Length: 146
Image 1 (cartoon, helix red, strand yellow):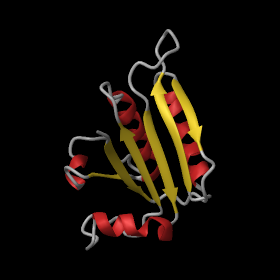
Image 2 (cartoon, rainbow, N blue to C red):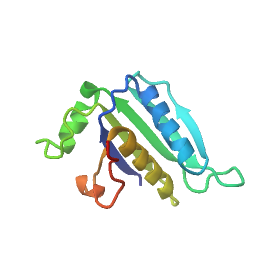
Image 3 (cartoon, helix red, strand yellow):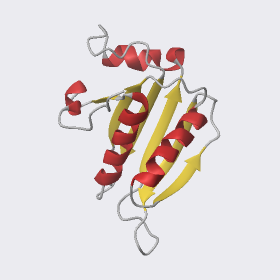
């Protein structure tokens, strides 16, 4: 069974590929080496890649995760409204939806934390999942002072 963690962001990015590239640029200097595999191509609004933390022997230290990024207010509007129909959480107008999908027996939680931190730093991300809704945000990386 897969677990999906979704982030609603305001990014100003033009394409999904540009957003993923910017996110990877933020992730690379922030910890252990990463292994990446890009999927696609898809439409301009969507980019997908698989990520894993690289261990000393060159193999993944945990299961691979999938990162999907969708950009454009109109493109992600249905997801925004479904998560917050009354905009109680201030996500209306978001233009980037990032989804981290974990599956397998050994999820790479440290990599999820790195991605979460990078999304908050870059685009003031608001996290959401199907089990906890917006409550998942408790005790997680805080937005930096700007």
